[in-house]
Structures are given as C-alpha cells and as structure tokens.
Image 1 (cartoon, rainbow, N blue to C red):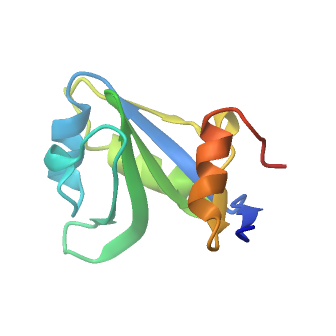
Image 2 (cartoon, rainbow, N blue to C red; image 1 turned 180 degrees about the horizontal axis):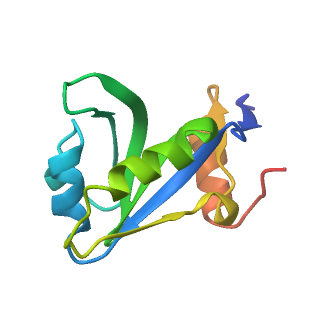
Length: 126
C-alpha cells in the first residue's frame, strides 16, 4: 500500500477574480503568464508595486472563467485592496473565496491516488 500524508493549509486564503476582463486584468498586473493559463491548471507568480518590489508570491489557478489566487491569509485583505485599486473600468470583480474552500496539502508516494479517490468521491480527507 502506498503511503501519503495530508494537512489542512489553514494559513492560506483565496481571492477569486471573475468577470469578462479578469484574464486580461490579471495578465497586466501579475508576473505570470495568465493569458496562457488553461482551466484546471496552475502557476506560481507574484504581484509587485510600481517600482518592481515583490509584494506577494502566490499560486494562481483557473477554473472555467474564474481565477483563484492562493496566498498567505495575513496578506489576503491588503493584496485584494491593492489590486482592486487598478480595476477602474475593467469588468472584473474580486471576492474572498476562503470560506467556500478547504485547502489541503497532499504528499507522499500515494498522493496522486489519494487525490484521485477524493476527486471521484470514493473517499474524504478529514
């Protein structure tokens, strides 16, 4: 039997970006190639101030037309506020999606199998 371990990532939060201009807006604001990000895929990136200083690093993924930014919970509110300043007339909205999701880290030789079993509804992570 393959071994794996998991833990809740409660120290992270999620910002949801959605709307007709979400992809273009994020591509212009972040260091990663958001335009090339396919649904169901993820990428690492950062958000910088106008002088190029990194304010936060994150994991970004796309689900359909929505984008989710996983970042430390302590930075969620200030980064969401910072990015919202640049939305202006773009058709983009943001929300704190943290209460709607449980973030879990999975590792070990059996991690892929565990993720597949959870995704199929065969088992649950407690």
